[in-house]
Image (cartoon, rainbow over all chains, first blue to last red; front, side):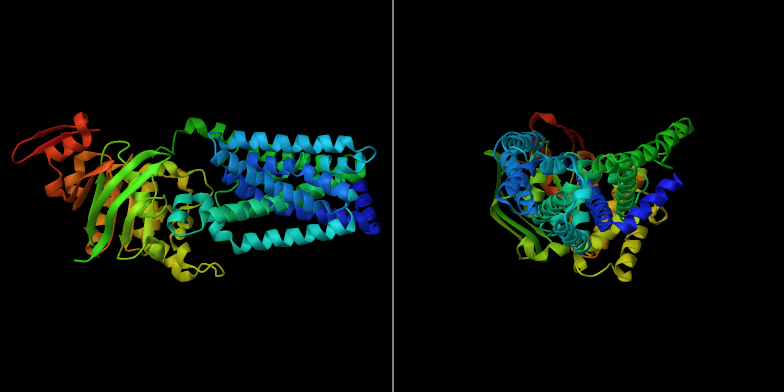
Length: 291
Length: 250
């Protein structure tokens, strides 16, 4: 193992594309971890999955006209979010069904258009399954900018985001623009998704959005700590995943996700307070909760 | 005495169904006001309309102004069942949220804010629980923490949605005493209340609702068999003599 690590570091120092890949992956792990905490507590995991799938047609159309895939992906992501809201407000269809209808439709549209193009599917496959090693320099820079925007927004709007997540009615009664906060959050979610496309791929983005945050959720009772831990799990998963991807020549996105899942499994069983085994041990001791 | 709340011809409709119709009343400052009525009477809807959280027809003025101009001055305590008690937040941080509307978005929470939160926790007798996660508390303790959050806000008007549901006797006593102290300081407190048994000891004024306003005014005038029968129909049995009245209700 030590040999492999040395080998990885060696390659990292020699190849600038690998350095870019590492920085991109770390940044994606960081912003996914941060936004993911809000997603979990707002009960929006399905929405995260929806937005990530819904960007596919945008990516494909951008590819066809030769524009930056970020623009197309962002536009279709936001359109889908708006359409979901429109359907659930204007019919008896509930939110989760509206999400299911919209994102599968968008994803299917992307697949149909993609399969109609001959000879280009390899590049587009990178967006579906992620290949952080194929990130171009322009996309690297755009990812840096998106990361900066997302982190600064979360810092600036930390309190309104937290209060509207915890107690929406009180936030509203206190005069916070709850609806606008929701849209701001959807915008950040779309940005994060778009930034993560090339690293983990459309299909697996939701894992990076949920798994590090869920792992952190099992380990702490304080939201700021949850944010920090979640970001740390996101970043470590990115580094570990990239390492396995380079050394054993396997898909980068999937190995990053597997690293994140491994952290979750460990926390699920061994977390000091919320862990499965600790709960088993505590059970006979009584029900201290029911005071 | 100054008028705290004036409501004229307030009506609320949800998708064509009437939730409240033509409600008018006014309440003076420095009172504990109970809002009672059967299920579906529009108690929560009335509170939401007063807070400007639902669309309504009619006029609502609070301290002679519209609600949007004095939101910082209004504290709201939600029903316990609407809160996610697994949320990763400690008691002291939940109380600190009562200060959020006073802190400009570009500033950090100041020492003054944390002191106010701390003092509010002491007022509800929960200071020794400050490092607990909110889900580790009993129902009554949770309610006291949310009252502390409202206290930390330094508001003049309080809205409490069913604060006495599912809580222990000790917590209930602490909360009732606190509300009475607030009243002495000239604050106005609006309480949605379910249980008819303690209406006379808890409230100064009463609003009896059943989609329409059945009665509004001092408890002594409103809490009588005729009005109760109007509000509850056959669902509340009222046994009364000159000195005593026993209400068996929902």
